[in-house]
Each structure stands twice: as C-alpha cells, then as structure tokens.
Image 1 (cartoon, rainbow, N blue to C red):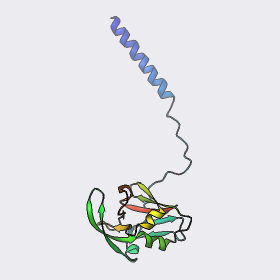
Image 2: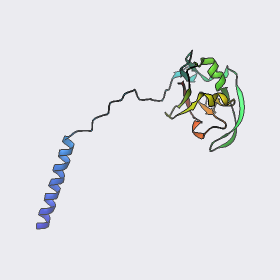
Image 3: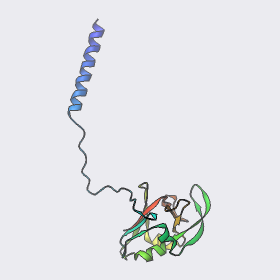
Image 4: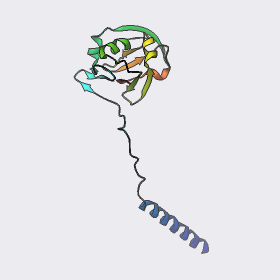
Length: 164
C-alpha cells in the first residue's frame, strides 16, 4: 500500500513539473540581424534562371537559351565521386565579362537550388580557364564544373552567382 502511495506522489510531482514548464511557454525566438538566405528560384518562360548579382555592372537573369546563345565550350574533367566526364557550358570568364564584374569584387558565392552555397576567391576562379557553368541532362538545370578545385565547389542545381 505504501508503494502505491509513493508512485502516486511521484506521478503527481511529474505532472506538476510538466504543467509548470508548459506554462513558461516556448523559448524566445532569436532576432535575426539579416534576412535568412533562402535558395533563389527565379522562373521564366524558359525554365529556371541563373541569377548573376552582386558587384556587377549589369545583373543578369539567364535561362538555358540565354546561356546557349553565348560561347559554349566543352571540357573533360574529373567530377568528384563520379570520375571523368564530358561537360559543355559557359566559362566563368565569359559570364564575368557579360555581367561586368566590378574591380572591388574579391569572391564568388555559388548557390544551388537546395540552398547549398560555396565560395571561391576571384583570383583562383580567374586562373581556372576551364571552370564553367555547365548544362545538365535536365533542361534549365545547371552545375558548376571546377576542374582542379575542391569537390565542395562543384555546385549542382546552380541558381545564383553573387560576386562579393
């Protein structure tokens, strides 16, 4: 009998503790100092656009048709985790010229449709003559091809290039 009384007291204390904690309400939401960076998904009649923004003379919103109208190059490169493959697309040097990257730009942030982003410094990017925005088997979907660079710089589902 004494055992049932002890269990009853313990359960009552637990119920009281949970009600007390519930009355405190949820934890305060932290104040953000800047807007969260959601993955851009600009759409146009031709499908997803590749946005080129930041320290540029001209912001661009390029569809696959726009990119294919530029000088298209082909390279063979070792894609991390996949191996040697052929890619075709537009070299970063051509995109930088089209956007008019400003002299104050020091890096490029490449963002994928899943929100993943990778940053490369501009001198390294400029030295990589075969680095490009490549076409994929899915129309309107792009990826970065970064021969000789770290695997984390190969961004799939590329939707935004921001020069900083």
